Image 1 (cartoon, rainbow, N blue to C red):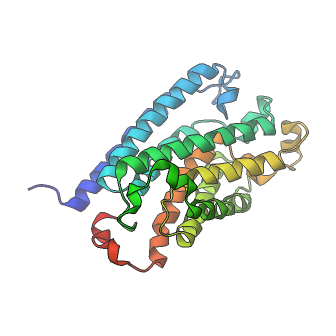
Image 2 (cartoon, rainbow, N blue to C red; image 1 turned 90 degrees about the vertical axis):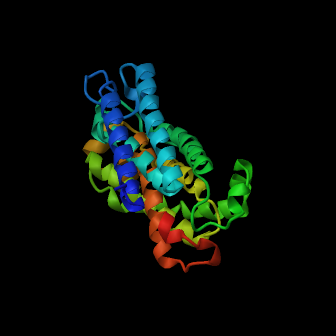
Length: 281
């Protein structure tokens, strides 16, 4: 007897998560700083080129898994899988205290976070393009080009909603624990994803993923302490949002926005073009 569709979807998601987690764990072993401990950012790795290659390998596998899941389920679930894969890699890297010990500057860390924003946007474009229309999207929406998704007026509303992410991160990231840093970004992404989906239900939510990283990175840059990061951390004057490391931001945005979009479905009425939504969501 063959598996029913629900069981098959579960098997696909679990297999994809396991593959991305295993790859990320293997790649994380090469992301060490000069002290021999996990680096908090790529710029702090003892061998930056090797660290960048290993990170690219981990994300490449996670992105492939995300596309596979997106084609069998939908793009939002695929982006969640991508976020989990990056999250495993992020969990094996250092936190803000490690960055301070390595002599990092808050400005440098915020710039690396900002660099991740266009990359996360590209990841989302790839997953959404190859996965097809979401079940709750108008039938003609998937026919838009990549360029029109970015220039559509609704993309501006999505970007504006992403401004909620830094505030949520500020409220959640109350200590220097690595797990809380990633968790704060997930909450920030969730809030932004929920609000943006309710504000622009007919827009492709592609922009939301990169916009969350962009707004958090911009807030980090604005709030970056001017003095020594280690001294600022030791005196307890560090901004909560500065505790988020670059990989934390990328992982939390991918997973959190997906959760927010999924949660938004609970507040939205079904529309005529959503036939079969329950079967595919």
